[in-house]
Every structure is written in C-alpha cells, then in structure tokens.
Length: 189
Image (cartoon, rainbow, N blue to C red; front, side, top):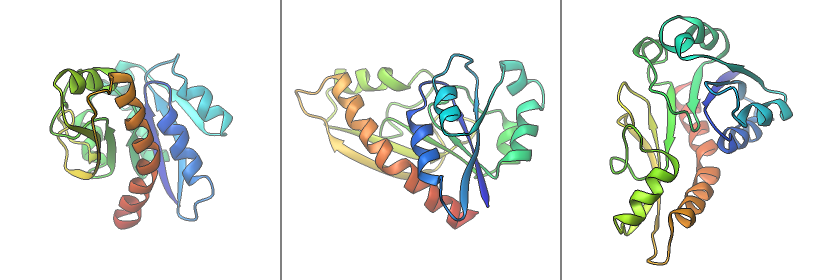
C-alpha cells in the first residue's frame, strides 16, 4: 500500500476530497494529515474521515527532524493541499520527486511567495486575463517552480469576479487533483 501524507494549512476541502477518493483504493491510501495551523478546519475534516492529523510548529518543520521523521515513518508520497510554507531542502531531498502541490493559476503566471487563494484570483481579474486554471506540479526549493505535471484551464469572462474565478478553480481542483495524484503515484510509486 502506497501511503500519502497531506500537508494543509486551511479549510481542507482538497484534503477531504483526496481522502475520500482514496478511501477504498486498492494500492493507495491517505495515512495522515499534517498542519501548521492548530485552528485549521482540515483537522475536523480529517477526524470525521478517521484520518490522524498532527499539528506542528515552525521549529518542528524547519529546525528539527520532527516532521521529517513523521513523514519517513508514515508516507511514501506527500501532497500539499493549501499548504503555505516552503518545504525545507532536507525534506525535499528525502522525498525527491515525491511531493506534489496544486496551485490555483496557470504557472508560471501568478506563482511565488504570497500568491495563494484569493490573492491569485484578484490578480487574474485585475490584470484582465483571458484564462486561468490550475497547475499540479512537483515541489522544489522555490515556490511554484517545480516541474509541471498537469494544467487545466478555463476562459475568464469579463463578468467574472475574483470570487467566481475561485469557484471555477475549486471545481477544477476537485475534479482533477485526486486523479492526477493517482496517476503520478501509480507511475512512480
């Protein structure tokens, strides 16, 4: 059984979707959720689905091997689902090409530090982009610069607001993220 650990910082809708997708999978399961936010809704979502969650501090993540050791013991792949911290190199090295992230824009546009959630959607609308979408990519030492695995796009209408773009992005995330994770894991696992 190939085990996924999900790192999340917020509401956890993508994490919940991934957990449900792999719940009865023959080869893949979500083993745990790790979060850097003790108030994150992802903790409640994981609990309702009988998935262990662990809250960790900045020190646990960057200055000690606490998170690394938990991951080595419980995960073969790592999925970032709304996780806002940069992954340290010692974790990247241990899980080389086994950390996947989803970004709510068509990278390389609208990526980088501070470009997440509504910040991205507002920038897309303000810049009158003709299209937006999602990018699923491998994680490397720079924000949103890892090799692209998958992109899906849609037309941004003149009538679209940041909120309506966010809704369209959410639908693409829900439809595509678990399937792409599955393909990557079965290919590389």
